[in-house]
Length: 314
Image 1 (cartoon, rainbow, N blue to C red):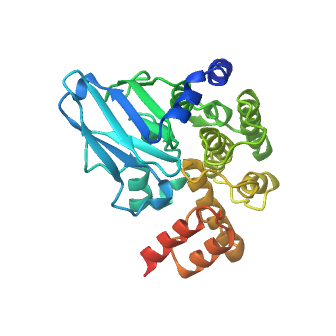
Image 2: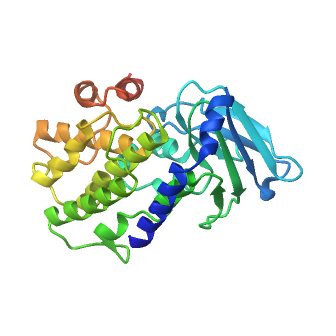
């Protein structure tokens, strides 16, 4: 944890003292993503929309380009709003989270970040910005993907070296904790990250920091729930469980956040448990689930989330 916090301080200083970003915002009208991969010379690479809430789509490829003779490639796109994108070398590969939520939606409670958001270039891109991938190897090494900007290097470290892990797990096993202690431990990590990254104040909606805060704050709840489920507790009326759940309603989270999707599913299923006096981690799409989602799902993802349910049950 101390090592990660040291990295965060370095990232924070770097981001606050980077004049290049302001210059790009003033001169570019399009978003560009450039990169280099010596392993993929001559191959076609694909830029894909990685919207976890839109997991039923087949239209996830945004653009494609060929890697040149020295490994360089570049995408130039007209971007109307911020989004999470992934780059890989197959036109057939569905972004990992979309595939899981489509085929096995009951697995939402498992922690998928490292497997699906770190091993290939994954960027939160904003309109009129430029991004560079200095190195891209298709290995799963820690340095397989290196970005020019420290925001995305930190984000990749966050997914590969998740700071919540040691709070509730040790040697790949769940820690033996009281429910309150487990929630306190992940909350302490969350609060440290938010403070060091200066994410307590007002944050521009749909910015990188908005996405980052969503992943960190909601990630704490989801790591707690993962521990809770693993210990096979069935006390959804527990005060700490409800506190972890209530964070969902505190503000409008970033709609590309994986943890926002996971916590949305948790909220809807918990509300159904409260209705039926049961404790199921997942309810299949139904008219009842649709009506519950219309009442409780976040406003900025409600239309897409309920559309998914309607498409499955019709």
